Every structure is written in C-alpha cells, then in structure tokens.
Length: 409
Image (tube, rainbow, N blue to C red):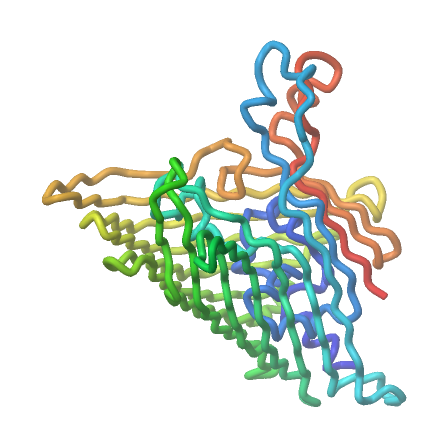
C-alpha cells in the first residue's frame, strides 16, 4: 500500500487522480508540469495510474460565423461540438489476494475511439500547421483509435506501449484520389529513480500520408507520402515536503517532415521548470518554459522563433466538496524571423488573447465529483461571466466549450 500511495504522490495527482481534457484546458491549457489522464496519449505507461476507468468527451464547441449577426439565433444550423470520443482502461492485478494490498505487478489495457490527435493538424486544411492551401480538399479520417498497454513492476516502475491509427482512402478507377492517414507508435516509462523522485520518459513516432486535390478538384495536392515524425518527452517529478507538492523539470522536442517534391519540416522544442502544490481542498501549479520553433517549406521560406511561456492553473472545491471551480492561463511570446526569397523580417508574436481556442490567454471551468468515482468537467464560454452568453436576450450561442467525464470502477 505504501508503494501505491508513494507512486500517486510522486506523480503529482493525489488531488485529482482522474482528470479529463476539459480539466486541462481550464488549468493552464497544457499539462507539462502536472499529471492528468490526458498524459496517457503522450506516455502510454501512465495508463497504469488510471486503472479501471471509462472516459468520454463531447468534444469541442467553437463559434462560427453562423453564430453571430442579427438573426443568428433563428438560423437552423448544426451546433453540435466537434471531435467527440470515448474509451476505457481495464487493469488486472497479479496479486489479487495480497495481504498488504499491494496490487503490483499489474497489467493495464486501454482503447480510445475517435480521438483526434494533434498530429492531424499537419495534414488537415484550415489549421495553422497545414503547409498547403486553405482551399485544398482533403478527406477526414473515418477511423481513429488509440490502443494502449501497460505493465507495473513490483517496485512500482511503470512501462507502456501504444499506437494511434487514423485512416481514410478513396479510389477511383483503381487510382487513389484521396488519402489521409496516420500510423503512430509510442513507448514510455514512469520510473521511481529515487525514494521521492519519478522519471517519466516517452518517445512517439510514425508515418503520415496526405493526398488530395486543389479547390477545383482537378489538380492533385500531395502533402505527405510516407513522411515521418518523431517526438520525445521527459520530465522529473521530485517531491518537496515543504510545499506538499512536486518540483518538475520538463523537456520535449518534436520533428515533423512533409512533402516529397522538396523538404517541409517543423521543429518544436520546449523546456522549463514548474511546481505543483496540493492546497486545502484543491491543487495549484505554475511553470515557465523556453520555446524554440523552426518551420521550413518547399517555397524557400522559413520562420524561426525563440520565445517563452508563463502559465498556471488552480482548482478548489467551494461550498460543497463535490463542486470544483477552476481557472488557468498562459502567456506565449515569440521573437520570430521570417526569411522569404532573401527578405528577412523580425517581429514579436504572441498567442491571441481570446479566440476560443486551446491556446488563448485565460480559461474558466467547473467540475462535478460524485463519490470520487464519476467526474464531469466543463470549460466555460469566455463571455459567460459578462453576459451569460446572451442566454436571456440576443443571439444565444453556447455556455460551455467542452464537457468531459470519467468514471472509475
């Protein structure tokens, strides 16, 4: 039992053992310096921290042009959120009748269906990372699935492997007209390197395929033909009794290659330090990171940026133990240099303060916790506190942008 409790404490997740993507969005927009359920997609070893759990999300709701205007409330358009997903993790202990309640060694298996992985942004028109034209026609993958497996050694060390598949292919007269596919594999560890320190390391890599047409539907557009991507991530959770939390150094690097007629590459590196603290009826974290990005495409243009990010998140039960309120924020600032056909331009760039995206400035959310088993998390619309999103008058749009839930059994 001591090993189990120590492992949870070192992972920095004693307060919120089961979390959701909605919680992360309201807790500073990313999870580099604290442990949460979403981390299983970066490091499959972490599924061992969340045994026997069902997870689901409605997806994300973002306002469109049809949500504004004089008669927006009267327009009959699809207002459902995009990219919902669901899945489960099941675990089996090899010590079912252990007297000291130590359940290790233990196997865990997980399957998540329809989750949209961030790597799809590189081969999807309309995203900032897409290197083609916004008018290109691509097919959305029809099948998306995460398959995960983990094993915990008797000393509490966690191992994991995983895969992500997203695929779509359309042929005409035996010729492939459209294809959008991702084949990704991952491996990771979460290892107790010392009495009060856990090392977490993961490696993710795979193949991208993206073939479509231009806006006329006549000319082929080839974005990726078996092009590779690779990402590594490492962080160290070192428990500090004086703050009842963890000191967390973090480092990650990603490389993505696209296009065959030339070389289009994306490079992203991030490294920094953070703290997470268990407070009375809640949890707090804060961190600072250095950022580096480099984008080179086939048109002999490149953008290089050096910058930083300051971020934080806090949650606390108020009024009742089952009701949690959360707030978080991040500020990203880059000094970028663009080089296009011999022309160099340097300027400051920052994340947009309020565009309803996962990268904007601040967020507010709520959580419901039913007997520490069922947890439902909400991300509030940014104008909720000012106008109730015109709920009582004017063109109504939405109260929340995400709703996610977990249930442990």
